[in-house]
Length: 415
View (tube, helix red, strand yellow):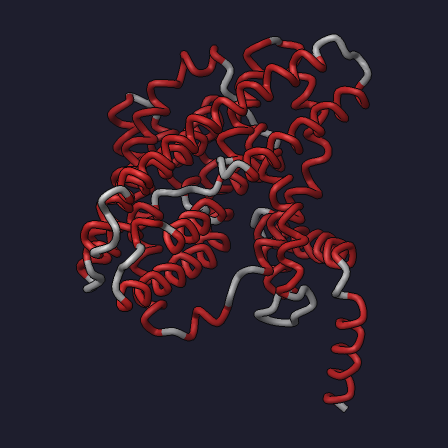
């Protein structure tokens, strides 16, 4: 009988799960249900969305097939565009004058200390230095999507949130540049083609950041000009979403950073005119389904199989724990140096733990990097291990990161 029920389930699954709309529908409904359950036990809804995706993905039921990943990627890219422009909208000059110096100091401390702590701990556990350094650089990345989703679900504002948005925004650009420098250094240690490869990697990172900023600047100006004399909400929404879609697509097609591009676009809009506050208010109501689908899709990509590999479990555990220490201690020391409030010192570090897209993107770039051309077969094997360690970290940090971030935000805003 059990086998018969299983066969019926498989038949129903395979009848519908080839269609992207079915995938989106079941992800949203399942995410909503588990998100509400998560709230009942004082967890952020994001945790429920991730668990829903994990349950529906290939690791468990297979209701969302792996071949749907490319189709669902579009939803992820749109959600990240909205996340980034929301963060950029917090970069009003008045706020920057008030917290700008502190944000820069905290970002640098947590970036460099995370890199140092993770690299050192992995070396102690006998991972070769070059690979420890690469993982240390990747560990400095923080996922901004979880932060924005939690802040918007709680509907909170304040100086703590200004610091939080500022640090996660600068962390993205800083991580890319740090990774480029370490990768260039790693090429010489691995015996790859370094003569021009190292400069190529560093040049690529600088080009990515600078051109992303330029594209965001232009997009922000165009959006402002196109909407500043509009008064109908639907017109402003159509133009704004169209520009976000275009800017995101262009940055991806040009191999730039859609996060940096849309952050810059948001910062330009918020500083050109107070009228542009309307854009962010109009966009906000459409974000809940985007965030729910974004995290549910991320959940489908989590691989339970990584938990069966002892080496990955050991090194991945060291990576996760040392990253938590580096992030928290870096934020604390940076906040002390910057003279920030006690709330920022004690609780901002808890919001730095989520890690996802940027870290995975750096691993993919690492595997395709010209710096590693000609590297030994052992090096190629180690690159695969690095990828699995990062995927394991994403698995753990995406599950524990949002609850810790919620605790940090709530405690950081308590009077």
